[in-house]
Amino acid sequence: MTVDNNCKGVLAYDGNRGSYIAYAAGAIVCAAGGFGQLYSNTTNPRVATGDGVAMAYRAGAKIMNMEFIQFHPTVLFHPQNRSFLISEAVRGEGALLKNIHGERFMPKYHRMAELAPRDVVSRSIFDEIKKTGSDCVYLDITFKSEDYIKSRFPNIYRVCKGYGIDISKNYIPVAPAEHYCMGGIKTDVWGCTDLNGFYACGEAACSGIHGANRLASNSLLEGLVFGHRVGQKIGESYFRKPRIGDMHIKVQTRKKAADIDVEKIRRDIREIMTKYVGIIRTGEGLRAAEQRINHYTKELGLIKNTCIEHFELRNMLLLSRLVIESAIERTESRGAHFRMDFQETDDINWKRNVIKKRV
Image (tube, rainbow, N blue to C red):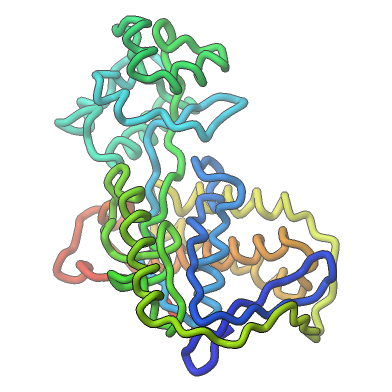
């Protein structure tokens, strides 16, 4: 809830009562995480539908650098699990990437081979999968002893063993998956947004510290530092306001409830984003994605939200549109944003942020 660019609280939907509740507060902190669920394969949990970022955008906050989405190159590719991370530390210990023919391929893509930056390794695997007509590649650390692997990577060993993969004897099937969103709600170095009284931290925020291609584990440090700083800032400026408790609001709308296949639409969104707005992008593909997302947005615009899944679906559509628009606007390749039709990094025209704000 905002009045004259001041955040007054949060308007929440009570699904059990079918009404809205207004919660007033002197300060609101958004730490709702990222939006990995826009993609078919992600390390993110099912709830990562970007609800906090979508909420902030609708409230009038600036959203920044939505085109920068990091894909982790080595995520377990198994029928029962396609979201378990195979740490970069495995490659750091000398593990080799091999295609379905058992051939090592990274040296032909980058001088650092398996230790190349994440975006390079992800694109290389994507290209190798396409060339060989496969669904995945393999990570080989079988040259290390079982005792060594158990002591160095106990959790990875245990999880893979649970799926019948003894990584001391078998190759690990892996493929890239969406992992982290560098973009989000624009903040300063204190977690302040351009709405007074509204703060953001963690993956929901875009403080700028990750640039175009987050370094491993920087997000953990970011959460500690900026979470603490937001608390400090609120402590310095917060003053208690009268609380609005359990205030139910009737919202009139011409929209009507409708029986929609939420899972099908959600699956379609993820397939569209993965195919056209994933690891490698083109202007043509981005415009095709934009057209299909806009179609769904218009279709659902006439339907009343009656459950949390409906709200999540609208948020996914909104964020998909913002990612696509930002990716179309940035006519260069930088970090996690790679366009086949603009493969060079253009510091003269594009060493700047792409900012979106609701008009």
